[in-house]
Amino acid sequence: MCVPASPWPADHHEEKLGAAQQSLIAPPGRCALKPLAMAEPTHPFQIANFRFYWASRFSMTIAQNAMIIVIGWQTYTIARETMGPSAAAAQLGLIGLLQFVPLFFSTPITGWVADRFDRRWICRATVSLQIACALILTVVTYAGAMTLPVLFGVAIVLGFGRAFGGPAFSALAPNLVPRAVLPTAIALSSISWQVGTIIGPALGGIAYAAAPFAAYALATALFITGFTCLMMIGPVPRTVIPGKAHPLRQIADGLAYVGQNKLVLGTITLDLFAVFLAGTTALLPIYAHDILKVGPVGLSLLASAPAVGASATAIFFSFRPIKTNVGPKMLWAVMVYGTATIVFGVSQTMALSLAALAIAGAADMFSVYIRQSLIQLHTPDDKRGRVGAVSQLTISASNELGEAESGFLAAALGPVGAVLVGGGGAIIVTILWTFLFPSIRRARTFDPSEDLPDPDTIKMEAVT
Image 1: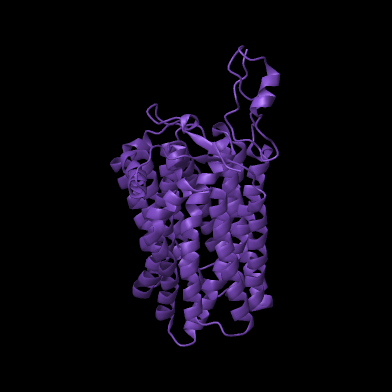
Image 2: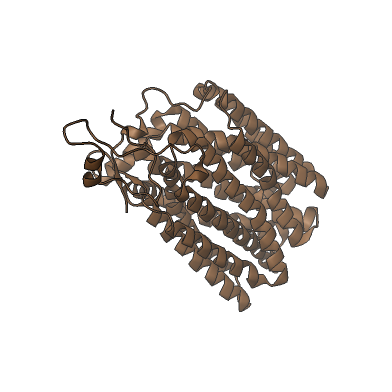
């Protein structure tokens, strides 16, 4: 009896048996020989490649959040030296807009690149770009020469780095683990992201309080750590895009798939509009500086609060994954997110503000876990990069453009009015999406429909 080949990617410490080795297992002419299968892992951390991937994302997330919170603080404080609160708030919105514009214009190509080339090297290249940005900010801050144009320029470069890195990172994860444990891998990746989001702003605020340049120096060291972990990821399968269509046609095919799969389209756009309206990140410096009056350390706590709730939720899902009624639960989670945002908007105390943000973070993580699992499991591997690019565009639109919207709306209505409008808008959007995309509320499990191609049947090639 022949032993079937294992469907999950080989660990980088393992090698597939060559033809000569296979001939020793059974004599020629008996049965079609395939490599002996090892027991399929039941947890992502049993796979070395995923452990390096997870460690890389963890260190990079800490670095990104430590750097971003300080960029926001420097932007607002520098602007307040010559501007009033409303004009300074608009500068925060401009930071978000400058990060989004490169992503918007490069999205059609970034997903195709992630599907066409080695995803590991794309990730490594984008992390190298972030290392360069962190070094520039370290040197300029140490020299006491920081200006708004420098911050704006770095924001643009970071936007390009994230544009190419996001689809590659998201599409790489499913290549590292078996399909059966992918939801657990998504939960673990979310833990690394959310815990890093907790630690990053706190470390950034503390380091900045000790010496302004220290926050960027810390980010540089962490980015280098993430790059080192990425270099440790061994060979993984790489998608081979079927056929020999023109690259522009392949790009169009990926975008068309999103429109054709109503479940994928609905989950992506729900996140776009809900977070676009209800996001509060850009307004946290205003709340810390002018409303709660808690300073940079308080700002770091406010920025970390959503990640506390999100981390607790992700840890729970890593042990108890959701298996039933996934669509309705995602819709309820977004409703809770909008409600918690409204509570934060009217809060006048630090304790209530932290609690509301933590609940919002938990609800957002609940939604993210379901959304990412549905998108990954309902998308063939040969299109994951392009679908991931569209997903990243909507996420960035909801974050960066949401920050811009929050900043500009705060300039018009004040920060409290902006938050209240955003939270209410997220609730209204969720109600509308319940009826516009009935496939979401009908989604009972993560299992894709029978007409979706099985990723295991897609032509793959090993990358060394």
